[in-house]
Length: 146
Image 1 (cartoon, helix red, strand yellow):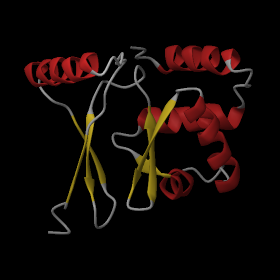
Image 2 (cartoon, one colour; image 1 turned 90 degrees about the vertical axis):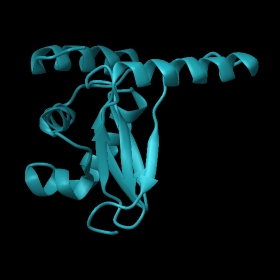
Image 3 (cartoon, helix red, strand yellow; image 1 turned 90 degrees about the horizontal axis):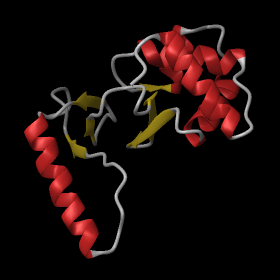
């Protein structure tokens, strides 16, 4: 997993180039913003904290970055949240509030992850499906909405 922002930029550049996309200044800024976020963020949050980014351009660039597997888009209750994708960020899952759309990152211990992987792989094998990775989303109510 790339840890330094320079390493992240290098890998993002490779992924974009492989899809015949350019690593523009705006895309670079979006990657930097998401690299410094501790939780998934919405487009309005990205733009409000970074006035040099324009909403319409940022949204188009987020789509390109998503298509190139640089970022992940989490949709919750009509809100889209964005974060760096694996391997730019540690493997994790999400708690999603079904009232306000809040998205919270959670990491599970290694034993739990291993149990989940084994169970999913077993089911996938029965269905002749080859898994690559997994994400889990737990939908419910955050502390503000209960």
